[in-house]
Image 1 (cartoon, rainbow, N blue to C red):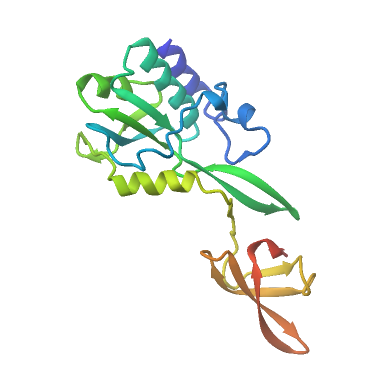
Image 2 (image 1 turned 120 degrees about the vertical axis):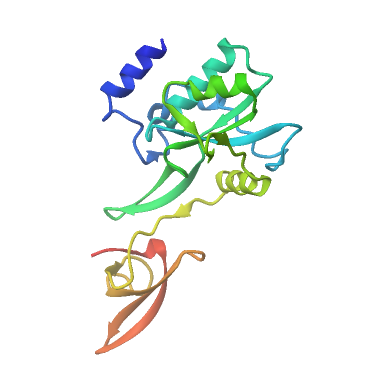
Length: 224
């Protein structure tokens, strides 16, 4: 079975999970595992280690994160490792993007090519994860897997659990944009400054021969 899976990865390099995943068709776009069956431990521990359980970062083939997660979960069951490997997640977050004048909510991987595994690290658990088809190794110093610090885990889980989607803004300072909402609708201007924390952009708009700065929301502009 592992050989078949490895052959599939080699033969279907173009058939990987696409980025982004559009909300509304999530189950079909991600993989065959229903979303309700995917364990997400996003509260109780707040990233704090429980006993000798710790979170590790595992590198895998980019685009195959969900397939690798599912393969690890299958190996946990078939190899009786529930007492050593507890959770496998693919960190994602929701974004709002504007494309062709339309707003869409999409789900993107926070760390393409990486998944998180909560486990008690020993020779057996290391072997089960490391030898899962699609896994290329643990992140760490040399050959020693390095667990994430509790504050790092907490930040990742909070990012996944964020209620408001992040607004994606791909424009750069100096780029020309069209205002598509508000009192300056349909004016053309130039991006002068970007404030990602507030999801705001300052656009220089020409009024009566003078450039005037206008502060707008990311969703109020589009490429010319």
